[in-house]
Length: 593
Image (tube, rainbow, N blue to C red; front, side, top):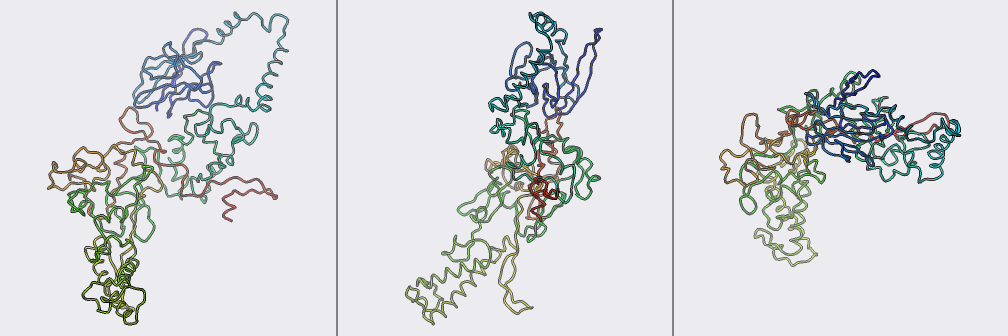
């Protein structure tokens, strides 16, 4: 939020001076404390008195708990602001002026009650003063000092109920449970909060950068240097604003070239292209690649998005349409999509059918050898149960009585018959309508090198579902947009399709699964190697940097997509006490040794 402040000062001669300054803030904090954005002196002004925020394109002012403000002569706890409103906080008057281009808020403030006027009014009401009567100044001063020391130092030490007198302001909502227990965070009187106190509860807080980079500017910081407490229930300790990140990342390439990270200053105008975690080889971990229009991967599987979505398909019972949600469902937190699996998303239409009705629906998808064992066990059980109706089976097996006792002749015949049935099922399983429909198959021949039969199997498969390991994306926050807005290649309708005959969810304007017509710039996805994650240009259609101004776009500071503490790194180290030799080692180093 871009704010312009103008202080009006009146010189003894009556001349009025105007002092202008501007600042960029998430919210404008007003109060007597030095940590406010607008500091107003005065005995009737609280340390944190009020906050002005921008929401839904409007400005709102809220009084801090227990405080009161006056707007246009009427006391209130908060309301929406308009140009021309006059706000009174203690002896100060604040006027809301029309903002200039590029500004969100312009305020002119002036002290209306001068110190001399306040003192004169006090003198008129005072019937007994230190300068007259039998009381002298010095004794009363000492008495006042003593009362302050007793009331605000000694009394809280001996009476826990009086300790809120020391509190500089309310803590955040998440710390409210320990608000009256100062010792939970403060290790001693007049001591700041140490990292050890924070890490007692926040045990899984991770580092920001790898330990081998040895960044003194980060490693020597205390948690409380960035996360300032006692600023109110609604304050977020985690969100430090974009400027906090830009201080380093605007010129990171020269400060720390070994990181390999590009400079970033503003999401809209100065941010590198998105980097994705790509499956370059299905049997290897993902690799990081910069987004490009021709970026492709190798998940080790064949799949055609257009074939499954653009037109109706023959389902298990009848012809049906498949929408994106048939296979892609968000996780419980709404951020990422759940991994696609054969059992949950494919089996209903693509059953493991080896031509044996008794095995339909019973084979567990997975390793080829494991499937063969399931088939072998099924036919072996048929032999033991005396339930063989195959006219081509040996008579000794077709006329065998049920039971576990098997003669040598039955055992030999059973091995040959079961082996033949497994081989027949194996041939059906790996044909073009079986495993080979989606997988690259291997084997099924005699090796020239060993002279042995190589069993049929499928190549490794790895389907990516976490494209942004170093950032975050929330699908639930984008639920008001159709999937095709960001993944157009997966939602292109068949050009021969009649829109009126499509299901309601597929028609233009439907959220979230509408189908779109083919057009310029749209690459229809017909292979699993297509990377249908959009680049930064698509994100910038809606998102800008922290200063959105009056544009109808989403203000997006760094914390919108990035966490400061990287969960992929080691935990933050606790600083240990010096040992007998006077040396200290942090907890992380101690574990490593």
